[in-house]
Amino acid sequence: MEPLSCFLIETASIGLGIFFFFYCFVYKSKRNGSKVKLPGPRPWPVVGSLHLLGNLPHQALTKLARKYGSIMFLRLGSIPTVVVSSPAMAKEFLKTHDLVFATRPNSTYGKYVAYDHKDVPFGPYGESWRQKRKLMTLELLSVKRNDSFRFVREEEVSTMIASIWQESGHGAQFVDVKKRLSSLTQNIICRMFASRTYSDHDLSGAHGFKEMVGEMFALSGTFPIGEYIPFLDWMDLQGFRRRMQTVHKIFDGFAEKVIDDHIDRRLGERKPKEGDRVKDLVDVMLIMAETEGQAISRVDIKAMIMDILNGGMETAVTVLDWAMSELLRNPETLARAQLEIESAVGRDRRVQERDVMSFEYLRCAVKETLRLHPPAPLLIPHESMEECSVGEYFIPQKTRVFVNVWAIGRDENVWKDAHQFKPERFMGINKDLRGQDFDFLPFGAGRRGCPGISMGISITELVLAQLLHCFDWTVKGDIDMVEEFGITVSRKNPLFACPKWRLTTEYPS
View (cartoon, one colour):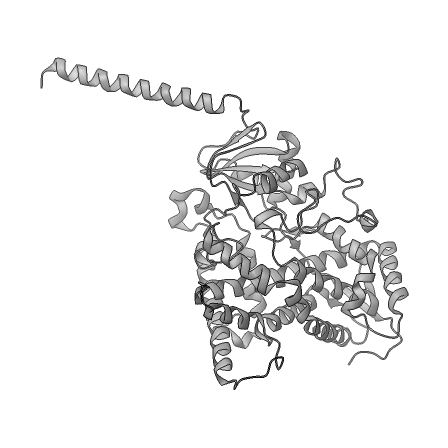
């Protein structure tokens, strides 16, 4: 080819490149001309702002929000991320633009543990997810279904009270309160979804049941390096992928056994009369899977068993542990809650679930616990399905969004004496737990709000009432409130307390 021809071709290519660059620049400028750049820290090469998260990301992000504002931008590795830390901004993302941010990002946990995002909390928004969410809300975790398991909760709470008294040597020794709470919630949730309790012998290998659930929940709140810096993913530097694959294999074997046992039992039942046995949640899912028009697979059922087990067990234990810790650190508040219960019930019988609605102060104490210690302080991350304008800011497609409800609950501009435990702040105020009040979002809001609120709250309120009514508690020294981060933030160290029987009825056996 002639040198002149090569020169002309190269010149034309350069010209086209310059034209394309300026076209894109002008187009972007017109599209975003009136938009303000989101504030945030300057990212480092490759890692972005990952190094700023530390061991307690919700606290680190709260400190950053004080500097950069209630909406800020971070680049976590290669992932553009927005962090929201005020009621007004939370409302923009979770209500005004709820549909745009209704999906979940692809995650390491969703892929390796939650059946490649087949579950409800981590599943992507779409028709399949809507069907499963509808099944969860209207069939599995409805108020009516939850009420049908009241006898289970009351039986298991009575068993827990007896085990605490026996373990304490009739009030002579300290007990690990959280350990007892974990056993309780495990038994309640297992009986709700499978009509029986499970022990470590029901799992494959040398793995404990609580260990399995705890590992799944701990891994769900991690920040795997490979998820944010993809070219490092194959190395599995933190070992998270290996741990996820291991715990998934254990859980999958357990879930297969649960489903097979239910199928065998249903085949063995000869036209049971209506009302012979309360249908558990796996029964309901299997029936729905056989219903025409319901596209529910065996994998879907296993994923939803995981949702119920994780959400029901860990959330309730975490809230109860924080509630007991706060009440024992505040004796006057504890005495007021006990007096309220005693005034309504007396000391000659145990609290029943129907009594709980009359315990306004105790229920306020639960809300105050949720304000200070929301189960999921950053919620589960959202992701934008398309580009969107939020106020004066432009949010590109596939931007990850964290809502820091821990920061919102401790905002001095929103809550007076925000860092103090004061249940009375909720007295006479109808603060909604289901995401209608954006200064109080312990369970999220909108399409992605938690569907299991009724189940979790009914367990929490009944258990707390029984613990306060049956026992006076003594603790050694000060109770530390050190946090341990996961998708739920729990107390790092066990709560040891000594119970003293306070009812006039005979000691539990």
